[in-house]
Length: 115
Image 1 (cartoon, one colour):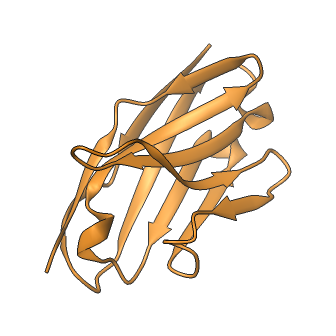
Image 2 (spheres, helix red, strand yellow):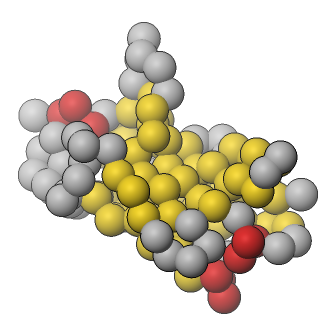
């Protein structure tokens, strides 16, 4: 069982930066693949960034070069550093933990980027 709580969202101007955190509780956190997803109103949830237990990362093309995902297993925490934010980044951001066949989701945190 893994429980996830996101934090760090808020309102920021275009071009600004924000750092999201996902704090996890439960067993065997370090073995989980972690990811950040986002969902804007009226749109499907999409992958923003993912990171494996070994530290391999992948990003959506729309955020590549601007966002960085990282994890600190000793703190049971995953981060998403978001730079050069755009209005199109506005969405609810969700943390995901996966260790097949199990998947867990956080409650989400709102990120709003003003033009």
